[in-house]
Image 1 (tube, rainbow, N blue to C red):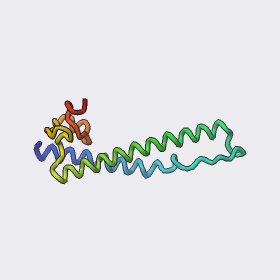
Image 2 (image 1 turned 90 degrees about the vertical axis):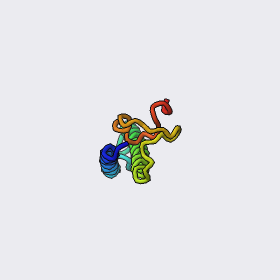
Image 3 (image 1 turned 180 degrees about the vertical axis):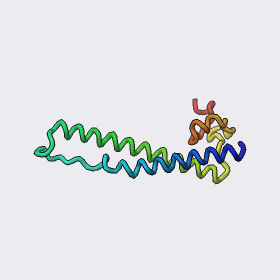
Image 4 (image 1 turned 135 degrees about the vertical axis):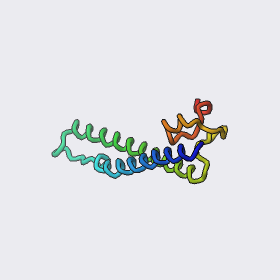
Length: 111
């Protein structure tokens, strides 16, 4: 893989990192504890709020996982290990990495 491709992918990964960090900081209010006072909120509204909270928590969990994968990809770039399949150690094609820069497996090994 040429250095120009690595620089392009690194830029994509850094943008993903910044976006995920920003989304994590702005979504804190939707994961806040739901008040269980039936006098101020009806039972169905409270159930809806609990469901919304759980969906927000799952979204936050997935963002954290993706952020971890982005950081791992950036670390592989720094260690000159980026772009190689974790299973067969063959080079991952650049098209796959441009579409999914956190990919750790080649097309054949990801099946």
